[in-house]
Each structure stands twice: as structure tokens, then as C-alpha cells.
Image (cartoon, rainbow, N blue to C red; front, top):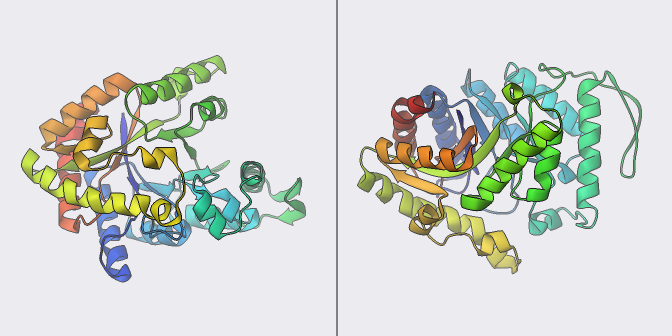
Length: 336
């Protein structure tokens, strides 16, 4: 069992320079607590994501940390020219000493894609071809490609990733049809689902992985995301989590409410912290309470990577630091 962090870098109410400095201190705390990875979302035009250029943000993370691995979850491929992205990936991998984890996807928000003029009818095909070009450029010294959207003729790849053939690949999904491809392509996978749907995702991955000749000992990470707050008592943790989640959720639904978009996942998302806990997607409490929650969740789902969302809303650096310290010292060891 491994533990990582997922972060939207959502609006905290602080001025932007202070917001970024607070987040950098939080990432330092995650590293000190023993988390293996830090993943950051990419969003545009919404208070849900204040790291719309993950590469710039992660380059700062590279310089403020020494051991924790990190990466986008995910780069929104339709918004990048693949040559530019190849170079950015190589730069980040070098700046971090080979600590980059490469998450990619096509984007789930037509509103955000629309800001950039992305034709949603072409989104999936564009993303697939962009990924094909990205991998070609990372593994070859020269790039040749002929496709529907891009054509490259003997382009020199002067920057190379430190990790060969390329950094580890990640894919985030809540869709069962994506699971078989993730397993077949040996991608690390993350889902935010809970309960029976989470079970189906994890079981589907394992079945597809075995069917495609995968060796159990080499299985990629199957991650499940959970909002987690740890404090010295259950009451203190809940007092932190409830208002922080309310602010985070307001950012989460902001664009959909402002633009009238119809997203079933957003529409059905729990309205407050207590409802989120009841759904099985979160826990706030003492180390004992959080540890018991995770033991049940892991037993139910059978996943091997817990992706904790521990910084959200208006949580302070000290609250996040204490939460990470308690989790690392009193929860993680039970899963070693």
C-alpha cells in the first residue's frame, strides 16, 4: 500500500502569491510526512484550480522538495502542442532529478475546453493522437509522425527525459470502459468513486491486467482518491473539514452553475462534508478513526494506492501540516 496526495490548488481566499507560498509549504509537509507522490489537477477559468499551468507550478515544487515524486493529474492534452509538451516533460524530469509522474487525459469539462475553442467532437481523437506523439517524442531521438491533426518530419528531440523510456504514466477516470485500456497499457490508474462502483473499477482493472498477461508482482498502482482530514480529536477534524469542504465544493461547482452546464457527476456530488463521508469518499477524525476508515475502504476495494486530498478550501498551513504529520506517523505504518 502506498500513499500520495491529490491537490486542485483550489481557491483558499488568500491573495495569489500567499496562496502559492502556502501550498508550497504544504507540499514540504507532505514530503516530511512520508507521502510518496504529489499530484496536481489542471483546470481553467475556475476557482477550482489555481495551477492552470501545471508545469510552472511543479517546477517550483521541484526546487522546494528533494524526495517526493510529483506530476500533473492530468495534463489536458487537447490544450497542448505535443512538441511543446515533450520539451516541458523533459525539463520537469531533469529539474526534479527524475521525480516526474506523467498524468494525461482529454479533459472532462466542455466548458473549460470551450474557453480554448476545442471542438468536443474531435476531443477524444485529438487527445489520442497527442499522446501518441508525446510518447514517440520521449522515446526517440528524432520524431516522425503523420496523423489527422499533426505531421512531423525528422524533428530532433534535443531534450531527453531522465527516466527512460519515459516517466511513469497515469490516467484518471471514473468510467468503466476506460479501465481495460488502462490495464492493457500498464497505466497507473486513479478513480474518485466509492462503494460498489469503486469495487467494479478496481476489480475490472485487475481482471483486464491478468487477462493481458500482467504479472501480479509488477501490477501498476490502482489509486482511489479520498478527502482526508486528521486532527488530534474527531471533533477538531470535523470542525476543520466542514467549512473547508464547503468552500472547496463552491469552487467545484462554480463553472457548472455559472454556465448552466449539465454534468451528472457534479450534479450528484454530495452537498456537504457529512454527506461526503456518508458516501464513503471522505473521513475526518483522529488517527484511529481515519485508520479504521481506510482499513474498511481498502478491504472493500482492494486498491494499492490511496490518494489523499488533504489540502482544500480554506485550510491553513498549520492545519494541513498537522494532518499530514498525524497521518504519516499514526496511520501509514498500519499499511506498511
